[in-house]
Length: 112
Length: 114
Image (cartoon, rainbow over the protein chains, first blue to last red):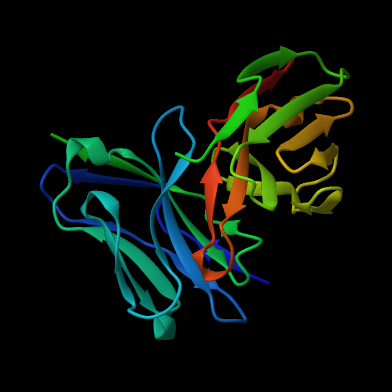
């Protein structure tokens, strides 16, 4: 069985501050991990993914995430928040690229 | 953007009526999915399909059925809608295959059951 836990349903940061969104997963097999972003009234779009190879992955819009097997984590970071980053972010896990399991989401608020 | 459309985009219906949502893709991907999104729950898988006429249940399949008679279309049916099925429904496709797979999402259908 696989599952994802996202700590913090709401995160608020000031513009220019570090963004850190937490994701921990549970998987009995090697996981493949994803971060998606959802803007209001839109579908989800892929930010970045970890499949194999380098554990630090870079995505769009300056986001990156690091796969830490020992901590079963895949936290999303961005050095400097921008107002346009305000959205909801979802972490997802799969072991076979056929069924994907999503976390409950974290809403990011960016204050001017 | 992946070619995924959902229809209708908004629907209001009454308890007890049947409702069918349609997902259409132009990517020829094998896997298609229906999710519902509710506050505090993220996305929960209702049903998915791994080929024409091949479907399987997800974690919240009760009250829903699906059909896939063509590669490009995946239908979600609520046989008798209930207020608990008020939600935003997302269709997704998965491709191109193997470790390069990722999910692409449609724009969503907002369903209100009165």
